[in-house]
Image (tube, rainbow, N blue to C red):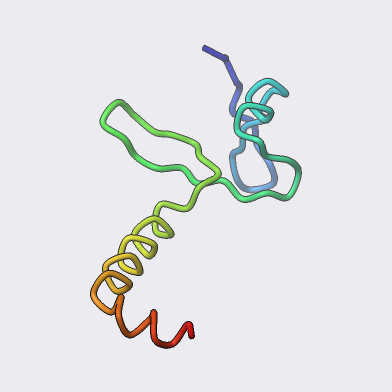
Amino acid sequence: MLKITVRRVGNSLGVILPAEARSALNIGEGDVVFLTESPDGFRITPFDPSFEEQIEAAQVGMRQYRNALRELAR
C-alpha cells in the first residue's frame, strides 16, 4: 500500500503519484487517468470504462453482421 497526500492545486485538490505507482499504471505526464467507483472504494486506471462498453457493442454488431462484413472485406 502506498500513502499519498492530498494537496491544493489552484482552486482544486490533487495527489502526486509516486514513481512506483506511475510505473505500475504505465502513465506519464499529460496522460489521462480515470477514477472509477468499485465495491471496495475507488480505483485509478488509465483505461476508459466507457470504451469497454463501446467495444462490447461493436463485438455484438460484428457477430450479428459477420457474413456482410466478410463480403465487404473481399
